[in-house]
Length: 154
Image 1 (cartoon, one colour):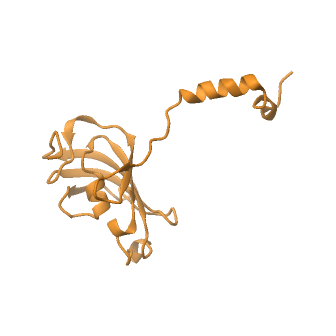
Image 2 (image 1 turned 45 degrees about the vertical axis):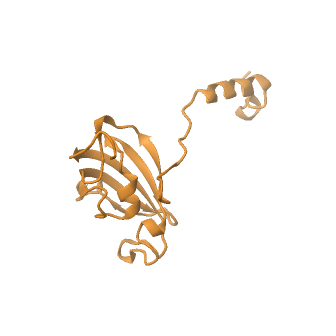
Image 3 (image 1 turned 90 degrees about the horizontal axis):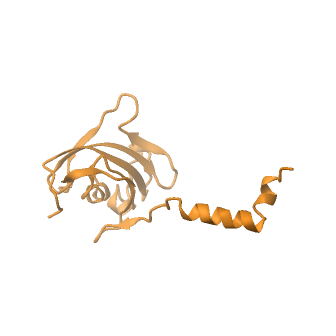
């Protein structure tokens, strides 16, 4: 006889096996802080190589931005007709949360940035892109190219 799924989980041995299996599964990473900033990040995929994004590096990325409050995508370099985005890191050419959240990334690394309004588009938002006043942002950033990278942040 086959037990229904809800009864299997009630069996003590099944619970023990489930706990044993789950303890070996990778756990979701906790959000990491950026000293001096409110933006946090999670590493989704590790990067490779010795070079990191540092102040003054020219960086090319794939990026997807989502409004935290509505979960609506407002921009993606992966959308039809779009292309990777290139910027100079750490010099204020992009919003603060992005600028600081990408420092230290390696080639191929993917991070999820969680950016509060004050380190994004602020109290005014960016209505043309559907970002409301005071809107927080989630950005997925993938490093495609680093020019002028360093091997440490200094």
